[in-house]
Amino acid sequence: MMSEHKNHEHKNKKADNAERMKEDARIKMPLSGQEDKDAGSKATAPHDAKIEIPLQEYEDLKKRVAELECLREKFLHAAADFENAKKRNARDKEEFLKFSQERILKEILPVLDNFERALDHVTAAAATGGPEEAMQQNFKTLVSGVQRVQKQLTDILKIHGLTRLGTVGQPYDPHRHEVVGHVAEEGPEDRIVDELEPGYMFHDRLLRAAKVRIRVPPQAPPSENKVPDAII
Image 1 (cartoon, rainbow, N blue to C red):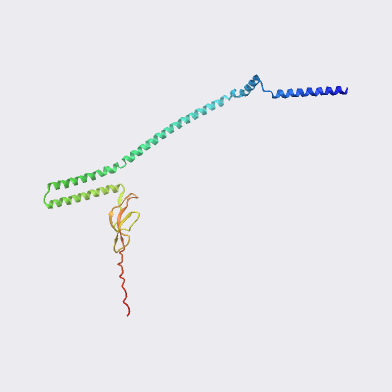
Image 2 (image 1 turned 30 degrees about the vertical axis):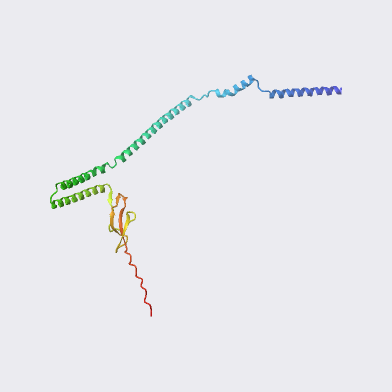
């Protein structure tokens, strides 16, 4: 009886082990084709589903999209207007720089006309000849005419902001004067003695420095080295 009971328990344990092995194999077994297809369709099903929103929310979204499209159109028009304005400003600037001196040139034209008249007068007088007194009178007339033309030109340039620097007798200013020579003489030092080329200011800006010579103290003559007489 004891042996039969043990054999029965051994058979039961084998049956349990076999059943457990079947369960493990069934768990580890890959899915079949149909089962895999069903699983894939279940996984992709949510992506194909449509999202439903209330009608009022849909109308609000349409309204916002229309507003954004309107803003986009305005932005494109503003960008185009800006580019056109930039090109127009560049063109206007080029025209301004090109013709900015038109006014002053028109005012200088009469000066050129007067120079031509003076030259024509001298040429005619030289061609006709004449006594010495007449030649001297023509020369005086020429000098007077040139002086008037110079004053006319100076007045025009002064109206447009050009002024001549004062130099002779004034203290030397390194910001306005360029020293090209020195004059050794008695008197205050660093004073301008004479002007070799005039300087000009354009409004508050130096256009050209004046070339001048300034005064320096004269050098003392070298003292003669006398040898003292020998004491006898």
